[in-house]
Image (cartoon, rainbow, N blue to C red; front, side, top):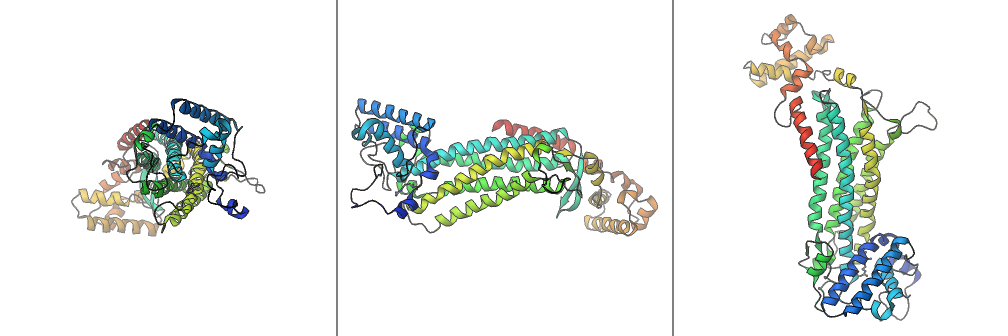
Length: 461
Ligand code: ARG
């Protein structure tokens, strides 16, 4: 077992099954370039502390560059005998610069602080990549909202008709949720920008090495204040899993609505051919698979989060090998979102709304009843009584198969003497929508302002 980073006190090599259990190259190899960046910074710290001569540093950096070129080209990769990415890369370095120089790099560091640093470097890149993709979904929602400004639809609570709203208002509600997610990613990056390098095994680095110098070279804002925390904490990985799961949940809620809206019964949207699938037996089918996979992936992302939290719960300080189990779930969450998000953006961007149907259904289900009550309040009727009268009007209509706007002045008087014919003026979808003109309301001018606000947020990302 050349390439093993330990062995001095062992009489023999590990048992095959032990090695198979321990090996992590099959998933941690994706951290190779971050490991190399860490090694370059560490070599400079060794040089600064007088532990590498100028020539040795030059030789070491040249060797790391050659190794990186071979990693990128695929000429160098993990061997079946390599335990992890760190061991594999040390083997690669020794192969290039010899055992004498290559063997100097490991001084003053441990795989414990290495891996804690590499996962943060990886996550800092990943949160940027994911945020850029989420931004594309927000942009697609914004574009649909912009082009449909003024189209009313049935707003729902409990999935029942509630009050008319603008389609744009509804679509932007999804956009705001996703913008909070990108804000969470940005906020997480602030915490990720603290380097554990120099924590070494747990107690901190010896040999006069400067963790703050290494942190700066790696693009971190600072070095951790506590080396035990630096090597043992994985809350940031769990937090990444949470934010990624929340994005999955928010995409899933969009997906669920697309699924409902594209049914024959709703008939609100048609899916573009490119973003739907057919059935192998039913020739007529056009299925919302993208939306369903959004819903399905959300479950998987939640599982990655809960699995990792369960792994962390009850772990004593400092490093424990259990911590190796943080990587596959968070890598999976990142990978799944990077595949899912562009498809959801495409799905949303290409939805065709049946705007006439949306508008015609907007006043159904007595969704203007609140407007009747509000009209009464403006006539100085106490709201509790107004609520009762409007409810009586709904009952009157329901018994006769009428809509509120069908009521004649005589019928209104029959429901309540308070209901003058002037109430009929507010019994329109447009009137109802534009009366909700406080900040955040569905009135057309307010939604126009919202479009501008969302665009600002997209530009800031
Ligand atoms: N592969 C380990 C991990 O992912 C890092 C190596 C530390 N291993 C060790 N035996 N101290 O957490």
